Each structure stands twice: as structure tokens, then as C-alpha cells.
Length: 401
Image (cartoon, rainbow, N blue to C red; front, side, top):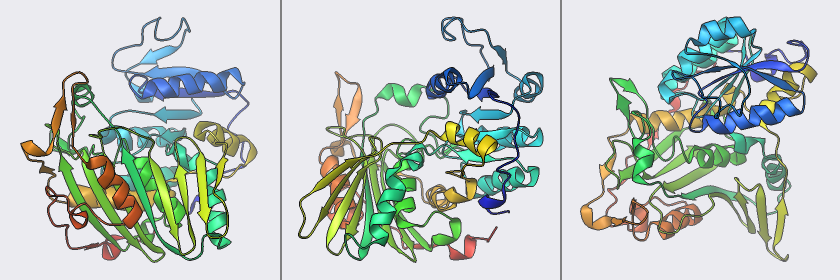
């Protein structure tokens, strides 16, 4: 596969506004719909079509007239789309991306880009062969805090980095797992889905921690340890942790969707003489180091669709090319290959009737402790955690693109 810098960058795809087709406009797709409208108001894009099995109503479209079809390929043809935004169920990502690529349509592909490393490579290699540009929708990687933190690390502001932790303590009610047939599934009708806490809702914590570690490509990952559990009546994990070994050190990320008191997820960089905390949804950074008072900084963020437009029309650097998510996809693959998540015993969780959701007592502290110590749940003494797997050496599984 060609490196990201060889993708076309300065060849115009057409005059602004660029026509955009959105595949998947409900659920999280509503956010993309609003974002397309925002960029439409700026004159950068034009909403040319929406691909949904059931057409959006006039109310959902706010009265806007737009072509709709359940046939993605036909819609790309009839609208003359320059960009397709794909926000559909995880198992459909690769096939839809390749349909668009085959028609010369550039892509913003929602995360996770695929449910397995093989499907990811099929997508990434197919997109590269077609000569179109693909941006993967890890919005946190558009934060200006990411390069700023990496610069602080390179300058030695917090000393030698000892490791990076990530913590996400969120809450999801029963309805979350009933919103779609694939929700909370590892597989559906024999097809991989891998809709778990670390691979979907809190995937940004994993991708952002790897980015700050400077380990974003598949070949940067040498071993992965996983602990996957669930309190909800689902196949996949809702309470999990992963430890990733790279040549630049270890990255441990802990997540739950069963928090007692849900909070903002964050990534924590441990240095020999300080630490940096990054609340990635807020673009907020706290620098703590020896001999200095704490310093809190808020950064801006570049929207990934806007960046894709600028890349296509002005030659701006693409922020999240497929190969920049290769390391994250090795984590997805390790979770896919791991034993099925362990169901927590009935005495390990409680139901909050007023919120119709399950809570794991003490999980908030365990998630924070994992990020703070780079330890896994079992190493922290969680009574319900099974001993973690022997590290999975992934080096032999990685082929250099």
C-alpha cells in the first residue's frame, strides 16, 4: 500500500462546494448530518444525497430537499458525489468504502474502520489502489492538543516517558444495546461486528493514547494483552482493558460503560518528572511537572471533514489516513481473537431502575487506577477479573504495506 503522503493532495476534485453523500444519517449519523450542514453554510460542501434504508422525513431534513436512495452506488452516480461520509454498521464499512473508491469518490469513514484487521487491509489496500483519499473518523485526532502534547514530550518537559494510560468511565442504558441488531454483538449472522467498549464508544481513548505514544501504524505494535468482561446481557464487552506493547513503551487503556458516576474520558502521559492529562473530548490539557505549578490549556480542533475538503482542494495534510489507524486495528484484531468476554457474576453489578442501566460498583476507581498505574484489572485485584492472557505477540501478524 502507498504511504499516506503519496495519496493525491493538490489535484482539485472540483469547485467548491464539493457534493457530499451521507450513508447512515440516523443515530450517530445525525451528528454528521449537522456537520455537513455547518460546512454547507461555509460554502465548502453541498449535501447532495442521503443513503438510508428508510428515507429521512421532511422533519428530519429540516425541510431541505435532498436526493435519497437505499442504493449507495446508484446515489453516488446520480449525485456526482466527490465525497462520501460513511456512518453505517461496522460490518458494512469495507464494502461501502470500496464501492465509493471504485467510483473515484473520496471518503470520510467512521471509526472503527473495520471489524477485523483483514477487512481493514482489504479496505485500505482497495482505497489506495483506486487512488482516492480516505479519512478515518477519529475526531480526537483532529485536536490541536495532540501535536502540542507530542511536542512537549519531545522537548522533555515531563522527562522520560514511562508509559501512557487511558481511562473512560461512561454509562449506557439497556436501550443502547437494543438500538440496532448489531449493538453489543461480537458477531452477527456469522459476520464479525466486534462492538465493544474499547472498539467503538471508547475507541478514541485507544487511538489517542497510541497517537501520543507515536505508535499509530500496525508495525508499531509488538504485543497486546486483553481483559474483556460484561455486566450487561450482551455478547461483547462493556467493561474491559487492554495493554499494548510498542518499541516506545506500554499503553494501557481501561474502559467501562457501567460507571457509577460517568465522567470525561482522558489519556494520561506518565513522565519521569511530571505528567500530562488530556481530556480529548474537551481538547483540554493539564501539564504537571516538577518545579512548576500546574498549567491547564485548551486547544482548538480541526474538523475531519473540513480537513478532507482542504486536503482535496488546497493540499492540506490529511490528519487520519488509514495507515495511521493500523495500530488501533491491531487492538481490534486482538479483541476479536480473544476468548469471548466473561460475564460478571450477578453480585458484581447493580441495576439502577430509574436509569435502566447496570453499574459495576468500584469500577470508576479501577478504570482510573489502570490509567494511573498501567496495570490491568486483574493486577489491580478486581475480584471478578480473570488473570490476563499471556501477551499476544503480534509482530509476525503484521505485514508491511
